[in-house]
Image 1 (cartoon, rainbow, N blue to C red):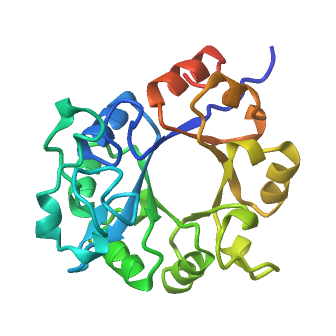
Image 2: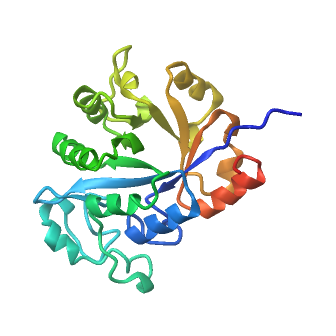
Length: 251
């Protein structure tokens, strides 16, 4: 009999945004209830330095308000509607805080949290790490950034932290060489179009675990070297879970 192929983990990108408003507690809960292995979300700081979960630097795309996230307080942000842009039926959903998201994660202890630091600042690192350490959640987390300086800062100040970066061409402030950015990465996220066997092998040789994003269509999935990847990130978790099951890549 052929050796069974290892299961592929599914990472829910900002929750389940194909159906629910992105980066909301509702979307997170629904994705976690499906059994995704990893929940990904984005952290920024308000003007009073509260970590909150929102992708963009401004409120305009995902909420009914406008302006910069970092220019308002957490209390002011609480009054912003983060649901109606997706559909009127989601009106009133708030932008969650990191603390609220971690409260939700407590109910799903098997899930890994992929925490992307969208504010590429040392203060966002400190506030986020403080929250994770206070709750004893660091071992469940991977800290992610497209800014290489953040990965270096994390590894220099919290040596036990697990980090995800990206191929050098996708990162800002990337440092090459044996003690460069790749030496600070435990995971690498490839844009799906760049996840070739040769590139994956480069990172495997460095001991870095490979994944690809975002896998939302049959065409994208079929183009990937699935045997070489361990994690797939998607905006549509139920579709990807079911499709991988049909391929024998999930129980």
